[in-house]
Image 1: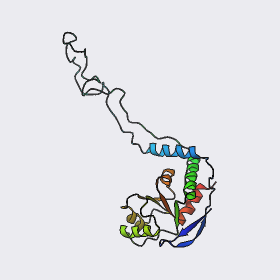
Image 2: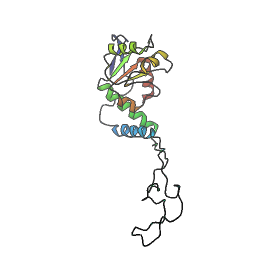
Image 3: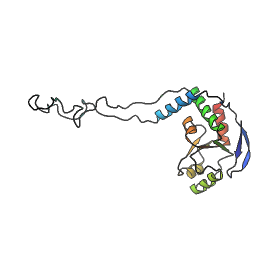
Image 4: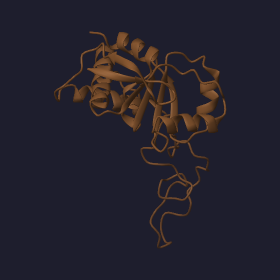
Length: 209
């Protein structure tokens, strides 16, 4: 598969041959599912916590006498049926992370990227030579690439591009990442993926068989 390379003005700047094997059939969908579920699970803080009846504050005194009140018998203010009492089977701090091996993550990323490439959702630019750090100038750049009104993932080959980082950080639905940290969830989330030629070549090395 060949991809058209554009410059930042939106004009053609040549072609790029995809250097990894495109997944054509319906295989590897389970790998994508497992990887995305594991990624979302890892984002959970797992800090929810509530107290049992043995942990809430309160006296051990019986609320009222056992008989003669016409009320149901009660032996503790900490009972879950009382306001301020403990919680039955309360949530506890826990780790939600799921293990997915490296081969599965790599397969999922290649599958997700293959589908986006086949769908025409990937735009390759010759580089991120952004001269201005102003947001309005970068919005004009996106408009020239015809992707201003869509959620966009920008992929760079390095994290040291200060102008690019400053220019895109205040634009809604635009995220900047690098080819080394790109993951399956990001590939699937955004309407368009704009990746530099250098970042794409690094990504090919990650996905090489």
